[in-house]
Image (tube, rainbow, N blue to C red; front, top):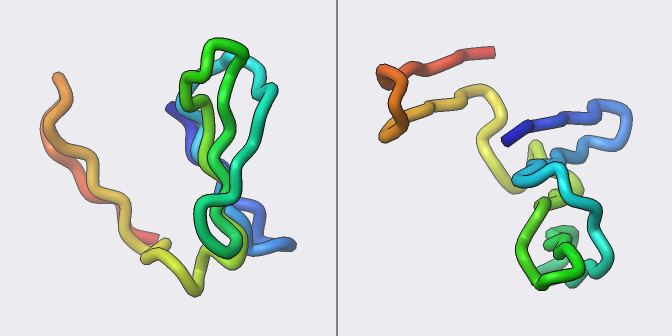
Length: 72
C-alpha cells in the first residue's frame, strides 16, 4: 500500500494494489474509488484532502510491525 500526497492539488491517493484501474466511482464529493477489471478496489483518491482528513498524523497498527506513529 502506498500513500501519495500532492500538495499542489491538495489530493491524496491511496494505492491499494499495483493493478491498473479500469473503473472509477465517486462515492462522495471529491472521493473516488478506483477498481480493477475484476472489480477489486485498487485505489482511493481524495480531493481537498487537508479539509477532509487529518494529514499531520499517520498511525500504523495491527500489522506484523510494531505500532508506530509518524508526525508531520
